[in-house]
Length: 603
Image (cartoon, rainbow, N blue to C red; front, side, top):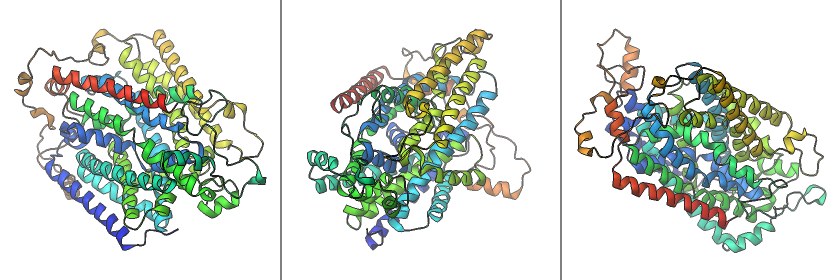
């Protein structure tokens, strides 16, 4: 297999980095970064299309190219539910959650322990399911294509992405995300077109996929054969690898926390110009989430059809020879297809696609994590130390690992937020202890998953029944129900909040702007309070002044400790022109209808 050693490939990758640098510098120069709103929310001035592109690019990382293609190669298209059901979740985020977030500002239940708990949990989730996974997937591709040392590649990526994230703030992240989205989509479409040309179209793919069996098998058993339901989304509710009730529920309300509550996603919508731009960006991202089926899952299946001995290997020695992982080589399906069928130049373009995916994910996580804790060296080391565990978890399928761990740790967050904004009776005690109970259940199951590995094909089952009889999607829903019940029961047993404390904190008590008031009334207000308040220059060291200059902080201003929030800013953001509001609502309905049609068509 030829690597990226042609001058055309190298030129394309270099040009990619040059364009990213230009876009980053442009966004740095055109944005004021002297306040928290400007740095972390890009001054709330981003149009809908960069918001939508950034939502998509931040969500789609190298783990999707590696993980979705690998799962597609192993078990077929059912995993696409996690992508397509993002549409209704993004709509829920923009229509239900964002107005409450804007209305509430910094106000919350009044206690600090939930904020601290969620901050620690966010860092843990970033490490376990985002940073480590993105680094592993990206390093796997780089290692296959360039032959570089894995950890040298990791350090280079971390330094590059961390540098322009810190210097540029969210504006730099969003505009580079927009460029990277274009690169990802164009490059991936070229690959899938070339792939279908190699296999002879979609119908021939079905025939060749079902015939793609490794020549070396375990005792000539049935291990490694494709699933009969590989081209179906809705599978048997009990005797299948992706039971349809569990998949539908876990891919919707089970991951609600990610699309509606996660810092990476919400931060981009809060950076929009106003509510309409936030909604349009969410719809655009929902439509873009249709693409992974065509540009990631199907290429994984094409890769298996073209290279069955490598991608579908089941013999441990054969797998070690091809990819260095005795569990299986499905994770190399996408990079193997790139290296196997694309000519020089196009291989470099797809290398740029993978770099786009890696860097967009890392910049998004870095920028969001910096609003929670200052990142230090130990966090980076811990991310890398987690990588060896990813190789063997969930039978070596990267995307299944991501969804299972997020189901155990992330699912309890969603019902807590939903109850908090929809049910006035929710209390701080109910939210905290309910979420803690849900996470204890998830941690127990996750620990058992890591302690008891699934047996290889042909070997007897030795795990506890709760692991192999209760699918991780069903367990996620059990965790969700337990969390919701705990929140309700504990809230009813504790003192309710005063009505005055509920102002702006729930959907029913959120700040509202009357549509009959004209848009001109809002435009008359100057948003002078978007910037942080000025202070007298304090006596600070030269090192601090130097750092402030690099980070774009004016000498006559100091970043205030909290996010500026005013009634004028709130009214400006929440106002929606009645005509365009109807158009956007119709587009949201259309988007959900398209997703329902696709699921029904590929059922």
